[in-house]
Amino acid sequence: MLRRTLLSLCASLLLGAVGNTTDKGWYTEGNFAPTKRLMITLTNTLNMDRIDCPVVITREQFPVKKLHEMWVTVVDPSLPSKPEPTKEEIAFVGGHGIRKETNGHQIFYQLDDLDKDGIWDELYFQTDLKAHESKTLYIYFGFSGRGWNQHGTHATIGSYMRHIIPWWESANIGWKLWFPTSVDMYGKRKPMLMSEEMCIRNLCGYAGVPKVNFDYGSDIMAVGSTFGAGGIGLFEFAEKPDSISTPRFTPVPGDKISERNFNEDQITDTRYSFDVVVNGPMRSVIRVRTMNWKTGNGFYELVQDYTAYTNQSYSTCKVQFSKFFPALNGVSFACGIKANTDESCNVVEKGIAIRIGSELVADPDDDTGQKAHKVDFIGSALVVKDKYSPAYQRVKTLGPNHTFRIPVTGDMTFEYLIAGAWNEGVVYNTPELFKAYVKKTAMEYNNPVQVAFGGLEQQ
Image (tube, rainbow, N blue to C red; front, side, top):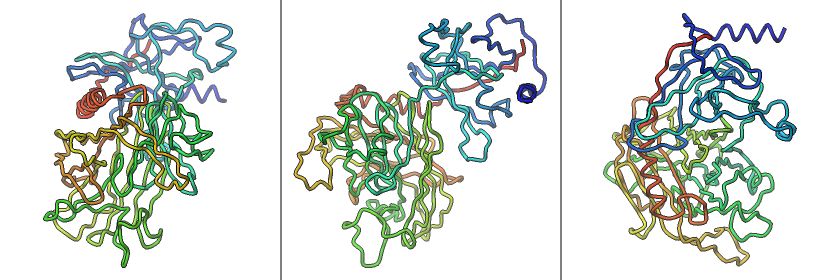
């Protein structure tokens, strides 16, 4: 019965006419010899090499709609094929380990259901492309039960010191929301995924604390009242450029904003919820819902999707307002990061803001007398896509902060990117390396890889 079901699913993959081909370069893996495939061509329009660059193919774009994760194999024919594994390797990976390949190598991918309706929304993978290169990959159709996917990212939600917070991370760097709308940044000393361990054991995230793996690194962002490593808000008063509204600091009668860091309560004040939408292997997504946000000059609700990417030191955030009821004219979107008071440690360019410099890393709630950990270089950055026409605005209140004003869009969405590094990490660990990485990433962010589809082929 199962075999008949799988054969039926395979037959349903094809839409329209399927051309025959005598191409001898078809991929095989062990006894997996697929007979149907789709060619895709990826084009890098930039005059620079791209490493581990994201490729996103939406369901609307893709010629084949009826898919299951185990009926898709993405193959790069330019990569060396895996040889037959040794007996020791087979004993370790078991029956799901990849066997001998021909005509290329399969690469990890995800078929992600982002809106949680049970139907995939995006096919996602990463690849390398040389400057101005056009590269051919094949997507093969047919059931395959082999292929372990090593995770390069992780997302989790945990009760961390009696407080529900989400984490999302690559092996290079991680982010968490101790405050629900201002991001904390976590630097690793060695590439690894560690958020799950931190949450399960409730380990203190600051360097020098006993019983914490030194390689895990440290929390390297003192957020306080700022936007931290990333956050959103609204510019509600056009005549007051230094005034910004944020969900965490909403008016409460008799309350002094400077004396609190969390919202007043979950009934009358802003409230939040967190979900893990996707958890690896190539990207991980945390969803943050902000509800019942009453600024005193409007009512708003929104969703943010934060995404971490394998082998990268940045996270993207897609913002979608579901309720947008301003009482004033001229309200604009805002996103920001913490700025340095020392202006020599700030870099501002078109759509880019970078904060660099040394910092004393210390637990702000510590009362044990432990010394702060001096870090010579910590970098954080914010990038907003050119298509959103971002205008830079320095905000000193609740700061200082680097922010960008973004005109309200027709679909009530906008996107931005945050990045981070520190001198104790293994990548981008100097100001010069980090600035170069951010500027290169900004170019790639504004110029995604182009995807073109060939015809469906049958061998």
